[in-house]
Length: 228
Image (cartoon, rainbow, N blue to C red; front, side):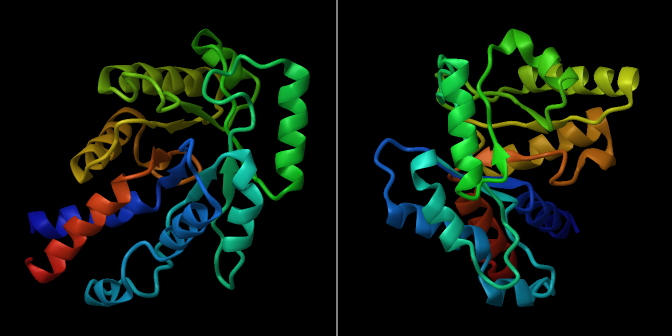
């Protein structure tokens, strides 16, 4: 029963993952492969074994640098595919960019098909960002020496909870950076469930930014189905 429970939660975790490629050496082919991986995360044969073939199981978004937005949008144009393209055209990862430049980059990204924008700001302004109507707050850029840690996640989750109690407005939470294993993803889900409740366990309020996590989850699902 424990293995069945774990497999179910890992499949759920996939629906929260924002697949990311933010490497200095990104190419059009890399982005296309990422988009294919986002659309067909788990092999159909494995999904059939789990009776999940008709559930539309795919990741929640694809994150790319502004240069590759058009490639990602084109790659994700397919019947039944609703995966949005997200980008960070705001001086990522430092965020030390003039406001005028940031706004122009955001406008261009949206014109190219982006529907979600990550904005890098000073961490002391997170509460102001929530007050201003941000959909999510993100734990890190994933480009630091230390990125997503559970103590920091707890602080941010409780800030989201306090903000909700005071205003009635729900803000999403996105851990990113260093979440690489199935155990990491399950720990994140458990933490959000414990601090904010089941109502936050939906892609509109919870995301995991990751580039390698899906591969580990796929290995665990394969092992669950085949025993190998």
